[in-house]
Amino acid sequence: MEIVNTRGIEFSGRMPSVVGAHSLQKLNMHTTQDRHIRPGGLEAIAQDPTGSFADLLNKSIQSVEETANRSSDLSARAVFEPDSVELHEVMLAAEKSRLALNFTRTMADGLVRTFKEITNPR
Image (cartoon, rainbow, N blue to C red):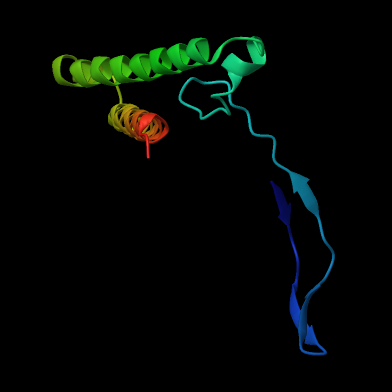
């Protein structure tokens, strides 16, 4: 992400253009905490590109299960030890879990529909 400082915008020939000196500042985003969102999901493929589809599917389902377990653990901690966990962490974990389960359900429904279409003789 870059931040650009300008003095304004002028319209020359009906087209807007930026006026003034630009000072570009690079923002270095550090994603070192576990609460930060990191690009992921393809690590299983990157680690073992020769693995089978079944292995990849199994790893993905295990990842969804870990996300759901983390969400339920944080929810339980929020009820029994409210000072040990922040509310936004509980809400983010619950939304990540809900989203992962919805994606998994959608993929499973699509696989079942595809299997039915392939095996249905016409």
